[in-house]
Length: 222
Ligand code: DC
Image (cartoon, rainbow, N blue to C red; front, side, top):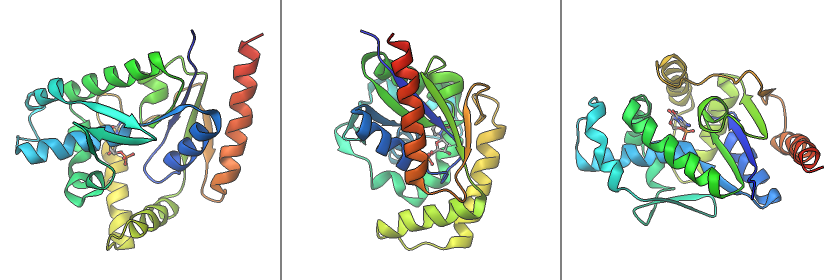
């Protein structure tokens, strides 16, 4: 059995998760939010009070269980959706995601899931590292202002008190860190479809990608 994969990369707030969730539902595929895995790892590292600067301190990952159910991540059987949005997690996740042992472990788990399921996977290095053979690779982006406003709305709807200009600063800082880190930085795969969603409706983008993906998958089956 050959499984299919749609890879979506891009910076925070570009609309990746909304588009990925919509497409996964429509295709009947499993949605894998890889950012949630880096966040949950950060949450656990903070709870264990390990030194976050030490790449070798993350061996707890060998005995950590990750499972996706209905697009939501469970770590060690705990639903991480709300915990993952905590400020101390957001403040430290870029650092944790820059460690080679952490990335090796999580990339391996992501590849394992894609080897056994049809997936829509979103993240920063899906098209370039995790699923180089994906049927379709997409790079979604948008202006910093638009991305900050989207994140603001998302956090606000979850009941968080947030400040728009602080969010803009956070996004700029994380973008810079994620795209300049040495190992697997955020970058567009050469064969990825580039889409700027700043003045696009997310439904339009999902529709366009659905059509494109179906074209590719159907072609491959004849
Ligand atoms: O998409 P997000 O904001 O939940 O991602 C959280 C952090 O994890 C972000 O700083 C980048 C990092 N990340 C990564 O390095 N590689 C991925 N595949 C996904 C996320």
